[in-house]
Image (cartoon, rainbow, N blue to C red; front, side, top):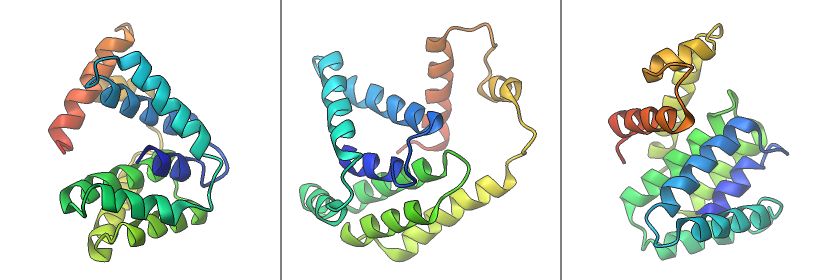
Amino acid sequence: FVALVAKVAKADGRVDALEAQLIGNMFDDISAVFPEPAKTKDILKEIFSHEKNISHDTEDVAKALNQAIRGNRAKKQQFMGFLIQLAFVDGEVTVSEESILQTIAQNLQFDPKAYHAIFDQFEKIMQNMHPKANINDAYKLLGVSKDDDMSTIKKAYRKLIRQYHPD
C-alpha cells in the first residue's frame, strides 16, 4: 500500500507539502501500532522514497496488494478512499494522477461504480470549498487555537477524521 501511495503522490511529478503531511500522518498512525514506532516509520519512509520514482510496476503492485488482502472489499474501499483523498489533497487531480488511480482500481479489482462514487464525493467537496478560507478558518474548524502545540492540533484533526471517516 505504501508503494501505491508513493506512486499516486508522485504521479504529477512532485510531492507537495499537503501530500507529504497527509502521508506523514498516515505513517504516524501505522507506526504507532508497532513495538518500535520510530524504526517502523523509517522503514515506511524508505519504501516510499524508493517507490515514488518507479512507475512501471503500478499494475503488479496493485495486483500483489489485492492478493495480500485476499480481495477484502472493505480494505479495498479504505485503500482506494485514501488514495483518492491523496490525489485531491492539493486541490486538483491531474490527468496522470487520475490515470494511476484508475490503474490501481482496475488491478485491485475494485468496483468501478464504487470508485466513481468516492471520486465524485471528493470532487463535490473540492467544488464546495471556499477559496477564501485561511489558516484561521482551519484552526476554527479543528476547534483549536493558533497558539496550541502541534500535538494538540494533530489530536483534534484525528478526532475529526475518526468522526467523519471512521474506517
